[in-house]
Image (cartoon, rainbow, N blue to C red):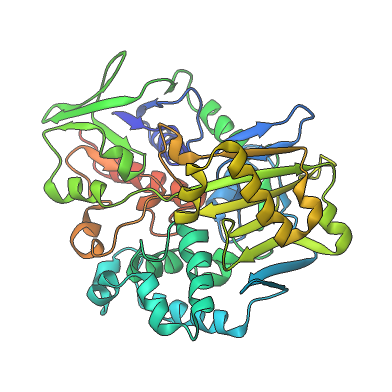
Length: 439
């Protein structure tokens, strides 16, 4: 059996590995000149590593842990010792008020009623899907600052969107998929606990290298997919690739840009139009040392206002330099993007000064990466269905269309939006094909 995999990110590589183990002949077609998809590690001249995309794994992410160990890599704990800081209504404090956690607990309680494999079947699915997270927060949070902070923390920090851009059902699905807010938001003991030595890009490269020689073809964007009773053909700029089945392991927003013949069913095509990518800017401020640690600070901050929603200490054990990474999401990220590079730098550094002190004003370097401008990603962290879309279009998310199967982290039922979800989705798509071989 021959299978084409579209996309050499973690989902595509996981699908290819599982298919090869099952005896299939696989060709991975990757548009970029590299594998890894939404991970990208850049090294400064002194060797300091900056993870420009996805970077963390946590204790409940078993497949990623197994892949790291199986490919001879190790992890190190995220730097999070010391006092965090919360910018709340214009002032700094060490923790948000209890009103935040009471509001988040309400959401966790609702999420427990959602089946992540079929969110549209929840008893209140229609109500929750019509209601945006922002509208719910306006009525449920005890005050406007709590509503704004929770919206930035959850819609921004988890989906890279504004709370008015995602439905309550989308948020509840995401919380349930990741095991609840405690795991999703946590550093030690949570989804941000560990980082991979060498960056996740090193793991992607080893996963690709472990496949049979010649499996991965880079610089080969798939423009069209044709299928009939005899098989499928994936068309790139350089030629046609025939197979018995295909796994499309890219985000739905990008999958929708491929031309299909016959045309996709209306509901699957409609889904690709209703699952835009999130919008985020990730900016690394690099300093001679992690100066915040001398003051007993962790570098972990969150903010109820301003262009920066959160920061983390992204320094690595093998470098003496301090890396403070800032995240901006949704509307704030779009506003920053409209500024000139100099204006954007000034706005971000002013926010960092407010969060960690005056020493933040003068980094050695400020490195940014805008995934929305990346031709083969067009946003991050993942795609999210727009309000009102789960009931009608959600069932098409994983449903194969003939010989075309769907992967990518957006299609995962556990850890959707994470590298773990990408791997699980790729392995699920491979299992579908191996369970029902077409030849």
